[in-house]
Length: 165
Image 1 (cartoon, rainbow, N blue to C red):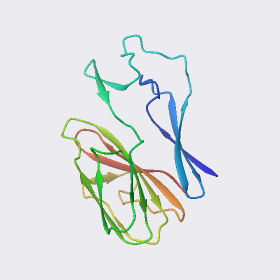
Image 2: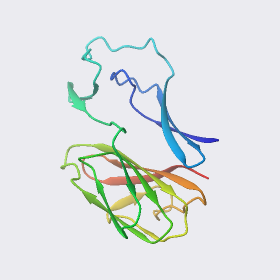
Image 3: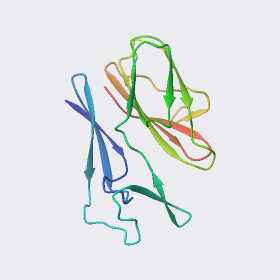
Image 4: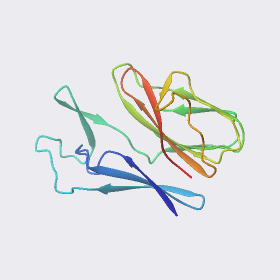
């Protein structure tokens, strides 16, 4: 079993910046586990309805970063990342794939998107306009899996590898 650690929102819905979301692969199964590093940290003015919020311009804004709705690409050469339906996608790279965004956030709204790429025998074409960290080139895929994080900051998409094996 292997693991890669990435930053995420807490399960209780209060944004503290002290949480880890762990992607764990066991054979063909991939699951996410949330770990709260400082469970006693609470923001007193945060909504207490067990939903996830982020503070924007001093106001709490409800967000949905649920990873319960995952999409898996199996046979289509072109795969739409429907960002209104999910923010976690599993894509088999057993053949060439072209990824496209469907229902992206509007300018001024942010979003995190995670793409788990399984294998590396196909060629991958990403949506245009992603600014990749490091050398600016799209990432090299690991032989078994690659976890890519895409962040839309309200203006620009940024991409980075969070883990690979």
